[in-house]
Length: 291
Ligand SMILES: Cc1cc2nc3c(=O)[nH]c(=O)nc-3n(C[C@H](O)[C@H](O)[C@H](O)COP(=O)(O)OP(=O)(O)OC[C@H]3O[C@@H](n4cnc5c(N)ncnc54)[C@H](O)[C@@H]3O)c2cc1C
Image 1 (cartoon, rainbow, N blue to C red):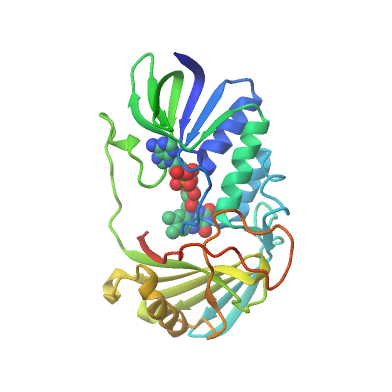
Image 2: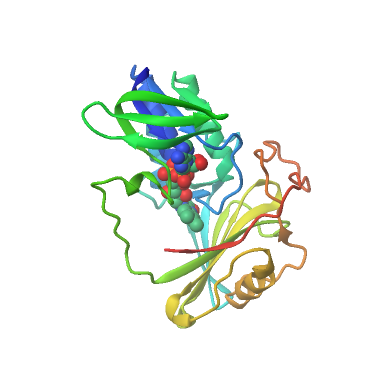
Protein backbone atom coordinates (compact mmCIF):
# COMPACT_ATOMS: atom_id res chain seq x y z
CA UNK A 1 0.00 0.00 0.00
CA UNK A 2 1.33 3.46 -0.92
CA UNK A 3 2.03 5.59 2.10
CA UNK A 4 2.42 9.32 2.74
CA UNK A 5 2.90 11.57 5.73
CA UNK A 6 -0.22 13.54 4.77
CA UNK A 7 -3.10 12.78 2.44
CA UNK A 8 -5.27 15.81 1.71
CA UNK A 9 -8.79 15.11 0.49
CA UNK A 10 -9.58 17.92 -1.97
CA UNK A 11 -7.38 20.30 -3.90
CA UNK A 12 -8.94 23.67 -3.02
CA UNK A 13 -7.08 26.64 -1.62
CA UNK A 14 -6.99 25.13 1.87
CA UNK A 15 -5.46 21.80 0.85
CA UNK A 16 -3.01 23.27 -1.64
CA UNK A 17 -1.73 25.86 0.85
CA UNK A 18 -1.22 23.12 3.43
CA UNK A 19 0.39 20.79 0.89
CA UNK A 20 2.72 23.49 -0.42
CA UNK A 21 3.89 24.41 3.08
CA UNK A 22 4.30 20.87 4.38
CA UNK A 23 6.00 19.59 1.23
CA UNK A 24 8.44 22.52 1.40
CA UNK A 25 9.29 21.33 4.92
CA UNK A 26 10.03 17.82 3.71
CA UNK A 27 6.74 16.03 4.32
CA UNK A 28 5.55 13.49 1.78
CA UNK A 29 2.16 14.87 0.79
CA UNK A 30 -0.54 13.52 -1.52
CA UNK A 31 -3.36 15.81 -2.66
CA UNK A 32 -6.40 14.07 -4.14
CA UNK A 33 -8.67 16.30 -6.23
CA UNK A 34 -11.71 14.97 -8.04
CA UNK A 35 -11.88 17.71 -10.71
CA UNK A 36 -9.53 17.43 -13.67
CA UNK A 37 -10.18 21.05 -14.63
CA UNK A 38 -11.53 23.51 -12.09
CA UNK A 39 -14.90 24.95 -13.10
CA UNK A 40 -16.54 28.22 -12.26
CA UNK A 41 -18.21 28.19 -8.87
CA UNK A 42 -19.67 31.05 -6.89
CA UNK A 43 -16.73 31.29 -4.51
CA UNK A 44 -14.20 33.55 -2.89
CA UNK A 45 -12.60 35.83 -5.41
CA UNK A 46 -11.86 38.91 -3.35
CA UNK A 47 -9.12 38.36 -0.82
CA UNK A 48 -9.01 40.75 2.15
CA UNK A 49 -5.71 42.42 3.12
CA UNK A 50 -5.17 40.05 6.04
CA UNK A 51 -5.62 37.12 3.66
CA UNK A 52 -3.14 38.64 1.23
CA UNK A 53 -0.63 38.89 4.09
CA UNK A 54 -1.27 35.21 4.90
CA UNK A 55 -0.74 34.33 1.25
CA UNK A 56 2.58 36.14 1.37
CA UNK A 57 3.61 34.36 4.57
CA UNK A 58 2.77 31.03 2.92
CA UNK A 59 4.97 31.91 -0.06
CA UNK A 60 1.97 31.87 -2.39
CA UNK A 61 1.80 35.53 -3.29
CA UNK A 62 3.91 35.00 -6.39
CA UNK A 63 1.54 32.28 -7.57
CA UNK A 64 -1.65 34.26 -6.87
CA UNK A 65 -0.05 37.54 -7.86
CA UNK A 66 -0.05 39.72 -10.95
CA UNK A 67 -0.26 36.71 -13.25
CA UNK A 68 -3.86 36.08 -12.26
CA UNK A 69 -4.91 38.73 -9.71
CA UNK A 70 -5.54 42.46 -9.67
CA UNK A 71 -5.46 44.80 -6.70
CA UNK A 72 -8.59 46.49 -5.41
CA UNK A 73 -7.22 49.73 -4.01
CA UNK A 74 -10.29 51.42 -2.53
CA UNK A 75 -13.66 50.58 -1.04
CA UNK A 76 -16.44 52.51 -2.79
CA UNK A 77 -19.51 52.58 -0.62
CA UNK A 78 -22.92 53.50 -2.02
CA UNK A 79 -26.03 53.94 0.11
CA UNK A 80 -29.38 54.18 -1.64
CA UNK A 81 -27.57 54.42 -4.98
CA UNK A 82 -25.39 57.40 -3.99
CA UNK A 83 -21.67 57.09 -3.34
CA UNK A 84 -21.02 58.18 0.24
CA UNK A 85 -17.34 57.32 0.68
CA UNK A 86 -14.19 55.98 -0.88
CA UNK A 87 -11.74 54.40 1.50
CA UNK A 88 -8.17 53.47 0.48
CA UNK A 89 -7.03 50.10 1.79
CA UNK A 90 -3.25 50.27 1.74
CA UNK A 91 -2.79 53.27 4.06
CA UNK A 92 -5.61 52.23 6.41
CA UNK A 93 -5.21 48.49 6.96
CA UNK A 94 -3.03 46.84 9.59
CA UNK A 95 -1.27 44.86 6.89
CA UNK A 96 -0.80 47.95 4.66
CA UNK A 97 -2.12 46.02 1.71
CA UNK A 98 -4.88 46.16 -0.86
CA UNK A 99 -7.47 43.49 -1.59
CA UNK A 100 -6.78 41.04 -4.42
CA UNK A 101 -9.39 40.03 -6.99
CA UNK A 102 -9.02 36.88 -9.06
CA UNK A 103 -10.97 34.16 -10.78
CA UNK A 104 -11.29 31.34 -8.26
CA UNK A 105 -10.50 28.40 -10.59
CA UNK A 106 -7.32 30.21 -11.70
CA UNK A 107 -6.25 30.64 -8.05
CA UNK A 108 -7.02 26.98 -7.29
CA UNK A 109 -4.87 25.89 -10.19
CA UNK A 110 -2.03 28.30 -9.33
CA UNK A 111 -1.90 27.11 -5.70
CA UNK A 112 -2.06 23.46 -6.66
CA UNK A 113 0.76 23.99 -9.16
CA UNK A 114 2.77 25.69 -6.39
CA UNK A 115 2.17 22.68 -4.11
CA UNK A 116 3.40 20.39 -6.85
CA UNK A 117 6.50 22.52 -7.42
CA UNK A 118 7.21 22.31 -3.69
CA UNK A 119 7.24 18.51 -3.99
CA UNK A 120 3.66 17.46 -3.21
CA UNK A 121 2.16 14.69 -5.29
CA UNK A 122 -1.13 15.82 -6.84
CA UNK A 123 -3.72 13.43 -8.27
CA UNK A 124 -6.38 15.08 -10.44
CA UNK A 125 -9.58 13.34 -11.48
CA UNK A 126 -9.35 11.08 -8.41
CA UNK A 127 -11.92 10.86 -5.65
CA UNK A 128 -11.56 9.78 -2.05
CA UNK A 129 -14.48 7.46 -1.42
CA UNK A 130 -13.71 6.44 2.16
CA UNK A 131 -11.55 7.52 5.06
CA UNK A 132 -10.53 4.99 7.66
CA UNK A 133 -9.61 6.87 10.81
CA UNK A 134 -7.61 5.42 13.69
CA UNK A 135 -4.02 5.13 14.79
CA UNK A 136 -2.99 4.05 11.25
CA UNK A 137 -5.39 5.99 9.04
CA UNK A 138 -5.89 5.35 5.37
CA UNK A 139 -8.10 6.45 2.52
CA UNK A 140 -9.70 4.66 -0.39
CA UNK A 141 -9.40 6.52 -3.64
CA UNK A 142 -10.83 5.89 -7.07
CA UNK A 143 -9.46 7.05 -10.38
CA UNK A 144 -10.55 5.90 -13.85
CA UNK A 145 -12.41 2.94 -12.38
CA UNK A 146 -9.43 1.80 -10.29
CA UNK A 147 -9.56 1.60 -6.50
CA UNK A 148 -6.52 2.05 -4.31
CA UNK A 149 -5.87 2.13 -0.58
CA UNK A 150 -3.36 4.74 0.57
CA UNK A 151 -1.97 4.99 4.09
CA UNK A 152 -1.09 8.26 5.80
CA UNK A 153 0.15 9.45 9.15
CA UNK A 154 -2.43 12.23 8.88
CA UNK A 155 -5.54 12.51 6.68
CA UNK A 156 -6.70 16.10 6.16
CA UNK A 157 -10.29 16.46 5.03
CA UNK A 158 -10.29 19.70 3.02
CA UNK A 159 -13.21 18.70 0.85
CA UNK A 160 -15.08 21.97 1.04
CA UNK A 161 -18.52 23.21 1.90
CA UNK A 162 -20.34 20.00 1.04
CA UNK A 163 -17.74 17.89 2.85
CA UNK A 164 -18.59 14.20 2.89
CA UNK A 165 -15.76 13.62 5.37
CA UNK A 166 -17.63 15.45 8.08
CA UNK A 167 -20.11 12.57 8.04
CA UNK A 168 -17.48 10.44 9.77
CA UNK A 169 -18.24 9.21 13.27
CA UNK A 170 -17.09 11.62 15.90
CA UNK A 171 -17.70 14.82 13.95
CA UNK A 172 -20.70 16.93 14.77
CA UNK A 173 -21.96 19.51 12.26
CA UNK A 174 -23.19 22.77 13.72
CA UNK A 175 -24.84 25.54 11.76
CA UNK A 176 -25.35 29.14 12.68
CA UNK A 177 -28.89 30.38 12.30
CA UNK A 178 -29.53 31.62 8.79
CA UNK A 179 -29.84 35.37 8.53
CA UNK A 180 -28.69 36.41 5.08
CA UNK A 181 -29.09 34.94 1.62
CA UNK A 182 -26.68 35.72 -1.20
CA UNK A 183 -26.80 35.04 -4.91
CA UNK A 184 -23.80 35.48 -7.15
CA UNK A 185 -23.11 35.62 -10.88
CA UNK A 186 -20.09 36.10 -13.10
CA UNK A 187 -20.53 38.98 -15.53
CA UNK A 188 -18.66 40.53 -18.40
CA UNK A 189 -18.77 44.09 -19.75
CA UNK A 190 -19.81 45.46 -16.34
CA UNK A 191 -18.45 48.93 -17.13
CA UNK A 192 -17.35 49.85 -13.59
CA UNK A 193 -13.84 51.22 -13.00
CA UNK A 194 -11.60 48.28 -12.13
CA UNK A 195 -9.39 48.41 -9.06
CA UNK A 196 -12.14 49.13 -6.54
CA UNK A 197 -14.34 47.13 -4.19
CA UNK A 198 -17.95 48.21 -4.72
CA UNK A 199 -20.53 47.90 -1.99
CA UNK A 200 -24.12 48.99 -2.54
CA UNK A 201 -26.21 49.13 0.62
CA UNK A 202 -29.88 49.63 1.21
CA UNK A 203 -29.92 49.15 4.99
CA UNK A 204 -33.53 50.17 5.44
CA UNK A 205 -34.70 47.26 3.33
CA UNK A 206 -32.00 44.84 4.48
CA UNK A 207 -30.36 44.59 1.04
CA UNK A 208 -26.81 44.70 -0.16
CA UNK A 209 -24.90 44.15 -3.41
CA UNK A 210 -21.20 43.72 -4.12
CA UNK A 211 -19.24 44.03 -7.34
CA UNK A 212 -15.68 42.74 -7.43
CA UNK A 213 -14.14 43.71 -10.78
CA UNK A 214 -11.71 41.29 -12.34
CA UNK A 215 -9.60 41.72 -15.43
CA UNK A 216 -10.89 41.98 -18.99
CA UNK A 217 -14.08 43.76 -17.95
CA UNK A 218 -15.41 40.80 -15.97
CA UNK A 219 -16.72 40.93 -12.42
CA UNK A 220 -18.20 38.70 -9.75
CA UNK A 221 -21.41 40.27 -8.50
CA UNK A 222 -23.52 39.39 -5.50
CA UNK A 223 -26.87 40.47 -4.20
CA UNK A 224 -27.70 39.75 -0.58
CA UNK A 225 -30.80 40.18 1.48
CA UNK A 226 -32.06 39.59 4.96
CA UNK A 227 -34.22 36.49 5.32
CA UNK A 228 -36.89 38.70 6.84
CA UNK A 229 -37.23 40.53 3.51
CA UNK A 230 -38.90 37.34 2.28
CA UNK A 231 -37.61 37.67 -1.29
CA UNK A 232 -37.70 34.70 -3.66
CA UNK A 233 -34.61 32.54 -3.83
CA UNK A 234 -32.49 33.24 -6.91
CA UNK A 235 -31.13 30.11 -8.49
CA UNK A 236 -30.31 28.99 -12.01
CA UNK A 237 -30.26 30.61 -15.41
CA UNK A 238 -33.89 31.71 -15.34
CA UNK A 239 -33.28 33.88 -12.28
CA UNK A 240 -30.82 36.19 -14.02
CA UNK A 241 -33.37 38.91 -14.93
CA UNK A 242 -34.58 38.92 -11.31
CA UNK A 243 -30.95 39.09 -10.14
CA UNK A 244 -30.30 42.08 -12.39
CA UNK A 245 -33.48 43.83 -11.22
CA UNK A 246 -32.59 43.25 -7.56
CA UNK A 247 -29.02 44.53 -8.08
CA UNK A 248 -30.31 47.71 -9.71
CA UNK A 249 -32.95 48.11 -7.02
CA UNK A 250 -30.12 47.95 -4.44
CA UNK A 251 -28.26 50.77 -6.21
CA UNK A 252 -25.98 49.06 -8.73
CA UNK A 253 -25.90 51.36 -11.78
CA UNK A 254 -27.92 49.85 -14.64
CA UNK A 255 -25.69 48.60 -17.41
CA UNK A 256 -27.59 46.92 -20.22
CA UNK A 257 -24.43 45.69 -21.93
CA UNK A 258 -23.47 43.61 -18.89
CA UNK A 259 -24.13 39.96 -19.62
CA UNK A 260 -23.52 36.65 -17.94
CA UNK A 261 -19.97 35.53 -18.57
CA UNK A 262 -19.84 32.01 -19.86
CA UNK A 263 -18.08 29.73 -17.44
CA UNK A 264 -14.43 29.24 -18.14
CA UNK A 265 -13.41 25.65 -17.69
CA UNK A 266 -9.86 26.85 -18.00
CA UNK A 267 -8.60 30.05 -16.37
CA UNK A 268 -9.22 33.25 -18.27
CA UNK A 269 -6.37 34.80 -20.21
CA UNK A 270 -3.65 36.29 -18.11
CA UNK A 271 -3.13 39.14 -20.54
CA UNK A 272 -5.12 42.33 -20.39
CA UNK A 273 -7.09 42.18 -23.58
CA UNK A 274 -10.27 44.22 -23.18
CA UNK A 275 -13.18 42.67 -24.95
CA UNK A 276 -11.73 39.18 -25.05
CA UNK A 277 -14.30 36.71 -23.92
CA UNK A 278 -13.88 33.43 -22.20
CA UNK A 279 -14.84 30.25 -24.02
CA UNK A 280 -18.52 29.46 -24.17
CA UNK A 281 -19.50 26.10 -22.85
CA UNK A 282 -22.48 25.41 -20.68
CA UNK A 283 -24.16 28.34 -19.02
CA UNK A 284 -22.86 29.38 -15.62
CA UNK A 285 -25.25 29.26 -12.72
CA UNK A 286 -26.31 31.91 -10.36
CA UNK A 287 -26.94 30.41 -7.03
CA UNK A 288 -28.25 31.47 -3.72
CA UNK A 289 -26.24 30.59 -0.71
CA UNK A 290 -26.73 31.13 2.98
CA UNK A 291 -24.29 33.06 5.10
C1 LIG B 1 -20.67 32.29 -2.12
C2 LIG B 1 -19.31 32.35 -1.49
C3 LIG B 1 -18.58 33.51 -1.57
C4 LIG B 1 -17.32 33.59 -0.97
N1 LIG B 1 -16.62 34.75 -1.09
C5 LIG B 1 -15.39 34.85 -0.54
C6 LIG B 1 -14.59 36.01 -0.76
O1 LIG B 1 -15.01 36.96 -1.43
N2 LIG B 1 -13.36 36.06 -0.21
C7 LIG B 1 -12.86 35.00 0.51
O2 LIG B 1 -11.72 35.08 0.99
N3 LIG B 1 -13.58 33.88 0.71
C8 LIG B 1 -14.82 33.77 0.19
N4 LIG B 1 -15.54 32.63 0.34
C9 LIG B 1 -14.96 31.51 1.10
C10 LIG B 1 -13.90 30.75 0.28
O3 LIG B 1 -14.38 30.56 -1.03
C11 LIG B 1 -13.71 29.40 0.90
O4 LIG B 1 -13.38 29.59 2.26
C12 LIG B 1 -12.56 28.63 0.25
O5 LIG B 1 -12.68 28.59 -1.15
C13 LIG B 1 -12.60 27.25 0.81
O6 LIG B 1 -11.53 26.51 0.26
P1 LIG B 1 -11.41 24.98 0.56
O7 LIG B 1 -10.15 24.52 -0.06
O8 LIG B 1 -11.64 24.71 2.02
O9 LIG B 1 -12.69 24.31 -0.17
P2 LIG B 1 -13.06 24.21 -1.71
O10 LIG B 1 -12.59 25.35 -2.50
O11 LIG B 1 -14.52 23.90 -1.76
O12 LIG B 1 -12.23 22.94 -2.22
C14 LIG B 1 -12.61 21.65 -1.91
C15 LIG B 1 -12.10 20.76 -3.04
O13 LIG B 1 -12.28 19.42 -2.66
C16 LIG B 1 -12.65 18.67 -3.80
N5 LIG B 1 -13.31 17.47 -3.30
C17 LIG B 1 -14.46 17.40 -2.58
N6 LIG B 1 -14.73 16.13 -2.24
C18 LIG B 1 -13.71 15.38 -2.73
C19 LIG B 1 -13.42 13.98 -2.69
N7 LIG B 1 -14.22 13.09 -2.07
N8 LIG B 1 -12.31 13.53 -3.31
C20 LIG B 1 -11.47 14.42 -3.96
N9 LIG B 1 -11.71 15.75 -4.02
C21 LIG B 1 -12.81 16.22 -3.42
C22 LIG B 1 -13.54 19.63 -4.59
O14 LIG B 1 -13.59 19.28 -5.97
C23 LIG B 1 -12.84 20.96 -4.35
O15 LIG B 1 -11.90 21.30 -5.37
C24 LIG B 1 -16.81 32.49 -0.26
C25 LIG B 1 -17.55 31.31 -0.17
C26 LIG B 1 -18.78 31.24 -0.78
C27 LIG B 1 -19.55 29.93 -0.68
